[in-house]
Image (tube, rainbow, N blue to C red; front, side, top):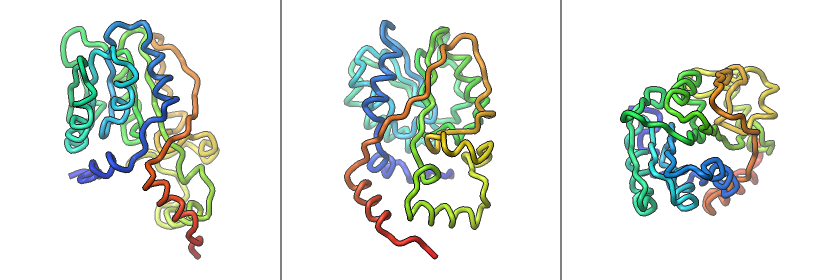
Length: 234
């Protein structure tokens, strides 16, 4: 049993997809690469692959890694009509434990969307370093959250959370954000303390941080509007 048992159908139905701007940015990192390989640790229901495959038909292979088998089963169902000539492999274990599935395997793009905070981040980055090509791109992505968005309901919810867990902002089940000043710059749950990201490699090229809006499903948008109309607790 894990924290995400039975969550896959709701993730697939309600979780916002990857914004088109982010998909195009990721696609540009693979320009000129013949049959590139995408590695998606913490893949969940496969939202990155679902967005990238229609935009980049030349993808040769996608590897989705998630410890939750229901998430991977749902991802497989969503990806099946999109794969075309692309191969897909599903790995049901912790992302930090991923190893090259065959000799000569190297990923050209590693994406970690809304999941990095659940991982042993140093181990996850070291894993990516071991299985990528010399010019690979590693993209860690996250959303905005109640910690960075101010509305009556977010302030009320933050107060409730902090009344039970204290004022320190958590990152996954074992980590915390380095200090409160990081909250203003953090794009959301996928963000981690700067100190947790001090894993350097000479082989990958740096990219700038970019922020893109997310199109939420209509039902979710309506639910959020209803929440904002609720009076603050207390």
